[in-house]
Length: 330
Length: 262
Image (cartoon, rainbow over the protein chains, first blue to last red):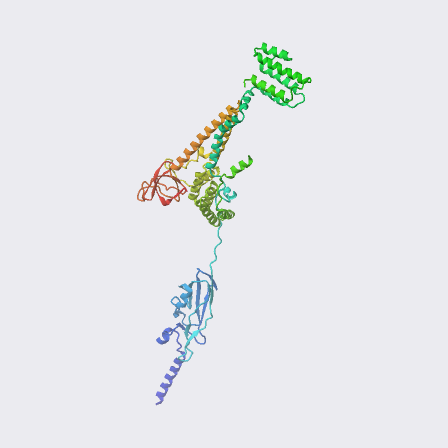
């Protein structure tokens, strides 16, 4: 090789070496199609000296069932933040099993991806974070695809807390709540049954029957009761009844008879002796036998008062009562 | 004599007392409802349960005014106004004179919201239960009749035995009393029969009174009849019942919209 040729080769070799050292891929376009289509590769290319780091962060470790929670993926140390691709979580079965909804939320910062998640069930879950691979140029050929380390992320889903219930009082009349309803519910009597009405009718029909029986058993009692309608008769008969058995029965009988004759037959007060009584009754227009009977009875009273033991405390009042009954028309 | 009286009274029929356990449970549910009256959501189910138990007691044949009153109150407090009114009427069927039931019925009627701008020719609040039946019970008449018969019996007995003068006026009072009781009883029966001549229904919920027995007929009254409105059956056809409202208006209502008075 001539001197000129050697000089040109050296220049080219230098330039080539210089290019070889400075051509670190900084864009997806710098990668081969095979490299770009690697599984779990989302376009991150590491810079010199630092590995790509992917961190998954939840907005909160705990969420109430029915609420949403935000998951953020941040990629550090990538030289091409603008070309990073969003990992699609919504189509992954392991994510569908935990979350009923997996939505994308726009992020303001390059290299940051946000997701809105809605859990399905109550429980504790470790999120099935996808592997995040990146292109690491300093690595030897064939080993340049590396996985970024991510710490596990756990989520606790709790049951929703029921809101405190507002107590509304029941409206109604106060006595509905105060009065004690009947514990048995059947305390009121039913209308009078046939039994009671039968007794009622029997009592009504029994009156004439009782009257008839009484008259049959007490034939004179009715007539006696009739004559007792007159007060003078009633008084005399009561006095004669009291005279029965008393020591001074004769005096009582005489007094009762005189009073009776005075009230009932207008016997003058001056007529005291048996003869005077008989005369007064005859003068009064009474039947002669009435005067004689009155004289006879009063004479017996005098005899009994002054020692004659012919009449007793029972016979004399009884005869006097029968005499009155005959005069009254029995 | 005492032995005879005891024997007679011991044969007298007494009111039935079946379903004690059911009644006790109903009472217990009612009491729990009362204790939770500050929280309607808690109290109402207990009153509903009590109403159900009282209804079962009623259907078993243990009907009485007190049972009807308890049932009506439980229905009202559980929120079923139509059932409360129906139960009150059922109790008044047995005892129209029951003042407590009459008062409660007026309370339930107060809760019925009449149609706005109601026309008195079409809608009126039903009148209070009045007449002899609303004041006097069968036992009142029976007691008065017994007193009259007693006076008559004593008067006749004394008149035809001792001939007492006071027996005649006493007997006259007894006769007059019997005649009066008879007249009042007759009037009472007539009022009850008149009340039962037309079946009483209670509207379950707001329902439109129509001119014919079908949804296609126009309304008889613009505003729907309110829940708890009382109507009398005039006729029926094809699952619809022709009714008369208290104001006099006549129209048709579907039978499922009405609750019968048991």
